[in-house]
Length: 241
Image (tube, rainbow, N blue to C red; front, top):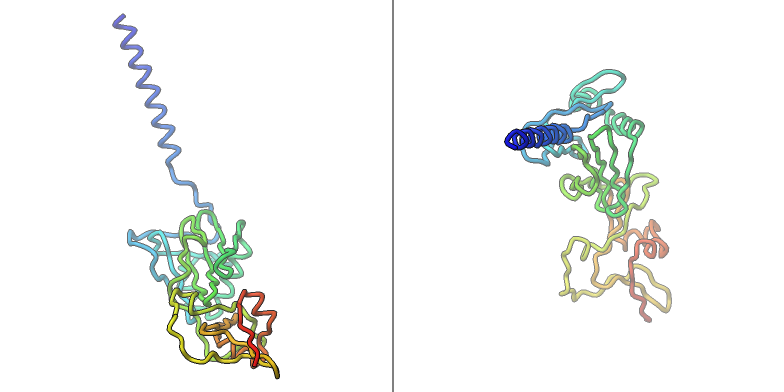
């Protein structure tokens, strides 16, 4: 009987040991399989700024401090590519679009797009308020890329053939509602018998270039129409004169 008990205990130990090996194997990190990227980690909290481009930041998540990028069979630190070639951003964006097997576009924030190279996620932000930062991290997607922070493009002049990116109500879009408005609403369009206003709201037009102007200005300049207001769910008041 004693021998059977010992044998049983040994069997249980062996089974548990094999299970432990199995679970250890299962816990091993997946291979990166990245073709373009090779990253190292520094143990710091993220996100953090990796590189400052003229019109945007490149952020990193997941404690990344070094990003090796391969282009034309040559591997360099990504920041070096940008430093050596003023036009490398266009090359970089074209490469990740061409080589990414999984591309996902956010349906909510204006069109932020995630690309994947192995387990490295690259999110090119494109928010309603013209934030076009780039965020790089392990298994990153647009939901966790935090595109709402950081540098935004603001330009002083509308570009040639600029397209409307969005029309928003700033008085509510940023959660800053002003209910104390007493000024006479500005008329953005009128006919001999009627006038059209936005009331006390701050309606602005955002363009793809990053230029921003009031909806009143855009309407008077012929940059937007009533169809555009309807497209972006902007309501307006119609009153008789």
